[in-house]
Image 1: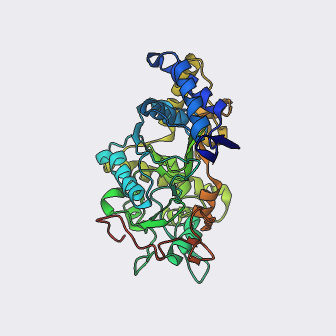
Image 2: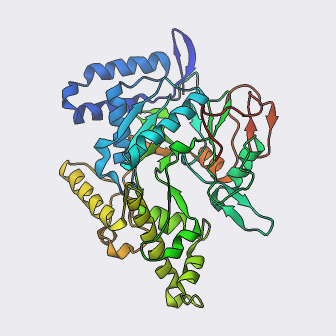
Image 3: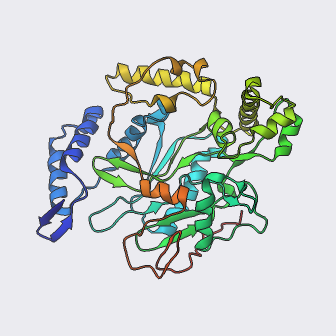
Length: 412
């Protein structure tokens, strides 16, 4: 949509109706904010003049928390009000964004007492896009394709790893299964590659309470799951870089990251070491091995003093959240296929009912370009000057070799 003001032409990036709907929602749930009429009038005028508007700090914090409340795929929304909102809308330069992502990880980890945190960077504006983080999560592990067709590391990120190598990332001399990928941040004019310092990673080595050999597998996982490639949309304003994190549900690690056939796929080796009969599926060897991997995850995080939740506890908490939302007269959207845990689903209370899946705003929005960049290693052209060098896997932008690192970072 195009609109004209006294200052010339611009592309409007915010729809007035969506902005007004959010302002009224904010005032309805925050009575101390007063009557919304004056604020609505101001927002309408600002959009007419500039193509968008600026949220107050209170509106931003409320919008971010409600976006989490509306996340139909998240089972851990009981504590949506407690999320710490870091308002960093003044930051858009890629190196600064990367540095603040590192600080996000430190704050969220909180010496093991993990707390929900979101860091909101500059929004898209009519004259300038906001920064973007191409990584799916702030911490992800590299995947290295081998000549025999196998993968060392995480198979999900083989193409992304290849893309980063093409634009200048140097993996360790002896690549391992848990090499942490650098952050990739762009702002439409340049792309920045940043190595995460070790003190921001907070990884947990896995061992088992009853199987001493389990530690010999050398498995580990990072403590803070920080989603970083979803757009935060509040009242028509889009924040393309808004990494947010809570704590892990044990099955996310034990029943997906380590158990999925197209991820680390550790169940065959665990079953072999347990002496299980793997000759046929009917022996349920996968099920038996899966339980022990998940026991190891929960035991290891607890031993490390790091917050994690099991799927039975979190399922009960979700139903408490659902009851609270219904008592408040609100719809609680939920995607059954995501709310029901990926193991022992029928043993949890969330399995035995249906849910509303109404699309509510504010919201976190899937960024298809960001997903393609993270999973396929393909980045679309960004706004700004013509690239100096175009890689088959990535767009190499103005700075040439992307060599800048977060100050004080170390090789992984």
